[in-house]
Structures are given as C-alpha cells and as structure tokens.
Length: 272
Image 1 (cartoon, rainbow, N blue to C red):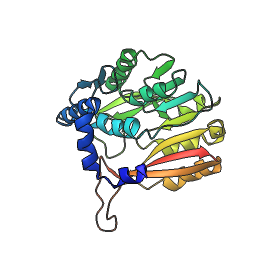
Image 2: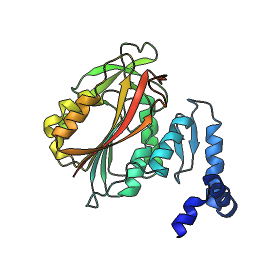
Image 3: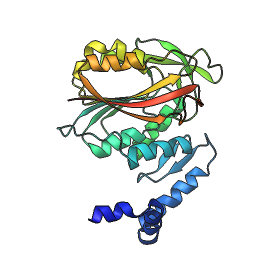
Image 4: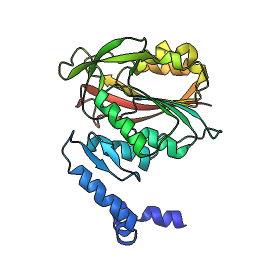
C-alpha cells in the first residue's frame, strides 16, 4: 500500500517535499544546479562524492553522476570481497570511486589515454585515498602501438577516425587480451568506438570474464558493427541486456548526431 501511495505522488511533488525536509538533499540539489551553470570544458571541482573531486567538464561529470551514483548502472554482486575489475575508459575516476565504495577490497586496473584527464584521474584517486588501483595511461586496442587520439575535453575522447581533424595527439595503446589471462569479475569498456574490434580480438579469452559492460558507439558515416559485437558476446556464453542513452525519438524521420555518433547503447553481458 505504501509503495502504491508513493508511486501515485508526482515526482515534482516528491522533489519539493525532499527539499523541505532533507538538508542533505537540498545541498546536493544546490550543488548540481551550480555545476550545471559552469561552461563546458571548464576545470572545476565538487564535493558531491564526499571528498574533493577534480573535474575537466562539469556536464560530463553530471552525466556520470546520474548513471553511476544515482542509478548505479554498474552495480553487481561479485560473490567475493575482493573482485578484480578492469575499467577501460576510466576518465576522471568516478567509476573507480564507485567500484571502490561498492567493494573496498577490489583490485582495479584502470585505463585512460588522454594525458590531461589521466592526471586528474590520478589526483582524484589520491584525494579519495584509493588503494590497490593500477592506473595505466594507455588506450585499449588490439596491439601495443601508438595511434592518433582525438581529445574531446570531457568524457568522449577516442582513437581518431577519418573524420577527426582537430585536437589530435598520439597516445600509446595496449592489447586488452594480454590482461584477460585470469579470472575477471567485471570488464567495463567505454572506449568510444574501439569496443567491437577490441572484443573480437579477445574472443578466445572472454570465458575468463564473469560480466561485461560495454558502451557501443555507432558513427553515422561508418558501417554499424552491433551485430558483430553481439555475436562475440553470445558465442562466449553471455546473456545480454541493453539500454539506449543516445537514440532518436523518430528515427525514420530524423536522426541527430552527437560527435559523429547516430546511436549508442549500453550493453550488459552476464552469465546466465
């Protein structure tokens, strides 16, 4: 009965009720409003996660905050107190902080290729006193080499594509497959378009992984590879769940693009 009554109350009414009676909710609301007013790609900081967190882009952080902290899309039950987590595309460390709060004894291997963002990642790990995290300033790829990388300035930097012609730097890469010769409790891949090739290269070692989160990116001027990605995961024995944070409400009529992407999907792969 209580749940039915709660669900019948409009969200806006519940919001104003929380503002009236919960000081911590008011403080969080004020801080989110402050961050929303900050111009894109402006260095800033916040205490929303408890300690001082350095930001490279407030808008990117707020999107991560909503997904990772508010909705906890990465939440999982490891069945052990010290799971091994590989974080591909760790950005400024919000995901690392979330994983460490979920499993304080976890060991995390975190990759972030943008050199400026990587320095912020390290600083945030130090600020939060995070231990047993290996931070690696490289992009995940199918080989150990160096490739052109487009610096977006927030959370969408990527190995460069043919259409990328500004703010390019050269970054070292490493082969993800080399890290999968052991039992992995969670592999998180948010690598902005490299995910299909990387997972195809790792296909014969995916059996070592218990669960995978992968953010799939479709670029408007390139063939889609979602079928290949799903096939690799299916053939490795995973069951899939999917969410679509970037989509067109009327895709037959109008399809917007963002940073060259016309579609994006969060794929959760797990053992049934």
